[in-house]
Length: 146
Picture 1 (cartoon, rainbow, N blue to C red):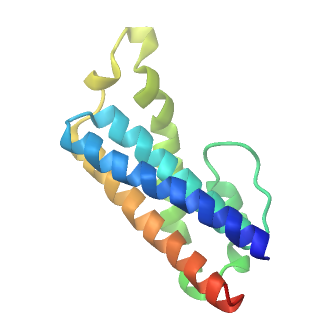
Picture 2: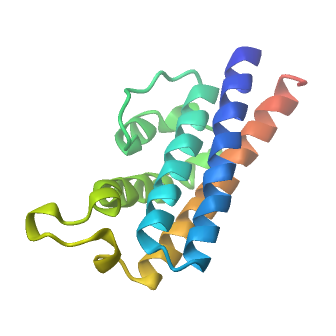
């Protein structure tokens, strides 16, 4: 179990850095980058949580289906948040590629496709997801006396 906690801790450390950078990108009006970093924060946070309950996930960006399928493996308080977590993962994973490359078929740059409001919402979802997943990590550390 301690190896899973170390791995999850590392993922959450990386997620925290993405979250910090997404806030900075938002301040710099770099909305596509804020969205992409928020998606990465959510992905890493959720994968850390899946690791904590012993679930090996596929190497995909959106783990919402796995999260929902594994709902019963999590504590009650976490299960109550799973719908939000799955939705955040699904929404931002869908925007990931567009935030990276833009609308290539229509020759639209990423900057043309996202508003400040969308970026703010992405950062809010990332903040909330990180907070929930970090709380799970802290609880698991206490249970394992780490």
